[in-house]
Length: 520
Ligand code: XMP
Image (cartoon, rainbow, N blue to C red; front, side, top):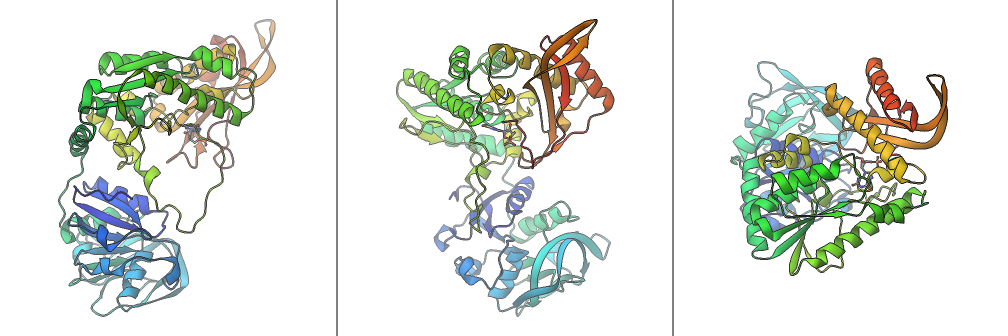
């Protein structure tokens, strides 16, 4: 549980909606701090003066399954404005004496809501129209309004699509204003936070930077901190933030596993040591990794070997720095939200992820996680505020085990060398054609198959190179990017003509699921 006390905020009580994180993001995009807490965790004692408004999220439950959701209802009677969304709207009505029942027609998808009365909540929401298109996703609905509640808008199937109790400052919407399909949905959220909760803006990248630098200085004092730098966005932002806060008391350790993209180690040293003047310990462990991975072809074994060796090397170097008290990690807010599983379901393990952030537990170090309140897009903005380059901030994600999981089968030095070249040509071509930022992640892989080709008058028998480029929101699902034929021709010619060892290029057109983004 987080419940940070020093910023005024909107508290979002989560009942398990798939959109809860979106609510938090919308509030933050409007410049106001927001926190999510599970309905199972929230207690009256957590409510302090910093909470200026409460949002009750949607969720998969039914309001009459009382044993499945629990929270201290007194929280809603403290005079703090409340906005109930979908299931949250139904609970708010039920707790105040209204009734909820199964809808005759379940509403999923777009619907129109029609204005019935004026409300602060809908200021400039309808504009000069009488209706707006909204996104519905519910099977139950409020069938009788509690006393002192007024209808603000109705849809064909939900008479009580927007309601209010002005005196108590209770507001309910049956649809989801947080999703982009709801026309002007952000306006409703904005009206709630600024007109009804009367909270001031307190959440910009500059505010975050200043607050975090101050907090980190106070927390760390005269102690030393170590940080595993991978060159990815999260660890780069953590490093630069701590660099600003504590300067030379920060020690970043960057391990070159030999499995990085072409010239990555040069760029990391250039950016962090030379440009940003960060205390950087560069460890060249290429040979050590290659030796440990010799003749290993099982993907899970590869991951474990790389993860374990990484930690061993990190510890080896960390021990050389005396009197270290803290270990910095790039944990983000979504990793921390405790309420993910209201229904108790767990996704099964697909791959054991090795994240270079997830480091030693036995080292007796205290964790510093400066980004733990932030979403990924906020981390990117903070990075820019901290003077990191746009290039560092907007790089495609890169897996901890690196190129090892892009060479299915046995890894050799020769294969890695070939792959680095192919990947570099591909990424450069994406940049040259203005495609890099349209794509969420792209890479080349070297398949353990040789095929026959012809170059000039000669027969060739060389490796197969696979290209993958996907679009995605968060890496959980993905679709392949549709290139023009001319681009595919250009890049396949470039790779085959320039790299000895590859004579054929294929493009991966599977989505996730059923495939994953990486090959192993
Ligand atoms: P998959 O292959 O699981 O990848 O669809 C989803 C996203 O996660 C990245 N990935 C990793 N990141 N350590 C990481 O830090 C890992 O072990 C790892 N495996 C996959 C992958 O690149 C994609 O962005």
